[in-house]
Structure formats: structure tokens, C-alpha cells
Length: 250
Image (cartoon, rainbow, N blue to C red; front, side):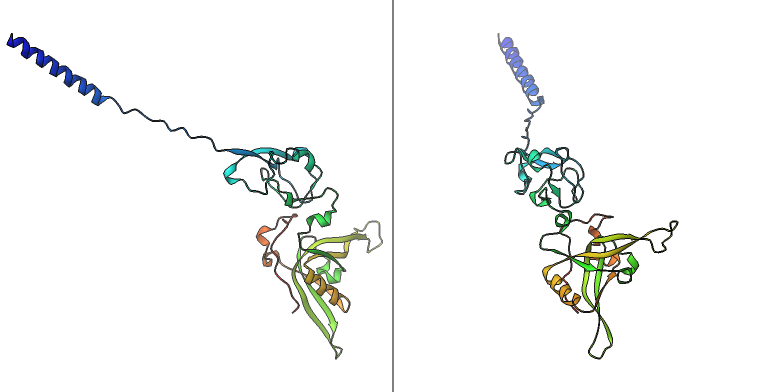
């Protein structure tokens, strides 16, 4: 009888040990953390690269999901302007934009705006200066170049004087006409600028007007490497709102 009791106790103990070993070997349950996708809103973006003064079409625009955490108030959202693609078609692009870049109202000009007023940055003025090849580096100054404006006159003693009145100003446009200097049908026509339109601030426009009433104005072409905005320049297109140094008379 005692032997059976000992065997029973031993069996129970062995079973308990086996059960403990099984439980100890069982891996800990893995808790899966499910991350929720960030909330987004549809933002109006450029469907492809947009160029300066380009007229927008519906094909140039598309809606793109944008994380709400990085949403800029100036972006155009579908929730605020669901008709934006239709209503903005025909507007003029004020500066170069890359594909996927959010559209901002400040990047666009009214659909009936002129080209020059479209590319002219806010706060700037466009002012024309009469030029000739002799006063414009032999006629090699082109739109988007940077120039210094020189004023030539005579002092009270009748001696010639030259002063730089404006420095590092942008040439917006060159009004060009074709002249055949040799009057020969086999000769090549030369393209000679008659008027240069400069990008100025109001103070610079006053300086240019005051000096233009006397003497002669000439444009001195600057090296692109000397320009403050050289890193932002492109082959033909210059972004609006670029840095320009303050210019005062010397």
C-alpha cells in the first residue's frame, strides 16, 4: 500500500515537472503594433515642370495626397477649393515650378496679365532706357543679363565725367530691330537693340530718371560669376523674387 502511494506521488511530481517545462519553453506572445496611416489632404500640385510665363491648362494640374502634419496654409486644397483645376486654367505662371511642387496663389498671375508684368517681381518697376551697340557692350547684352548703369556727362569745367549710378540690375527685355548694315542681299542682318528695359526698385527708377535727363546712359555687362544671384540663375529663365543688392549712386 505504501509503495503504491509513493509511486502515485512520484508520478504526480513528474507530471508537474513536465508541465512546468512545457510552459517554460512556450514563447512569449508577440504583441503587434499597427501604425495608423497619417491623415492626408489632397493638395493641388504641378503635373509637370512649369516654365516662367507659361499659361496653365487643366493638364498641368493634379491633386496629390499630402500629409496634414506638413500642410502649408498657402497650399490649395481640394477641401477648400474643389474647382481649383477648372478655375486656375488660363492663369500665368510667375516663376519656374518643378513637377509635384504645390501650387500657390502667389505663383500665379491673372490670365489677362501682360508678359512683362507677370515676370516682374513684387515691388519692382520696369523702366526703359534708349541704347545702341556703343552703349551696350557692342550689342551683346541680352534679357536676364545683369548690368551696371553708367552716366556720362561733363563737369563745370567742361571735362568729361563718368559715374556708375546703378549696379547689378537685371535686364528684363531688349527691344530689337533688324538692320542690314551693308544693304546687300547676300549680307547677314544684324540684330541691334534700341531699348533696354531694366528691373528696378522705386528708388533706382528715380535715380535713372534724374540722370537720364542729362548726359548719356550706358550699360556695362557684368560677369555672371559676380552676380549675387548666380546660383539661382538658369539658362534662359530666372526665378521671380531673386536676391538683388541695394543700389545707390556713387
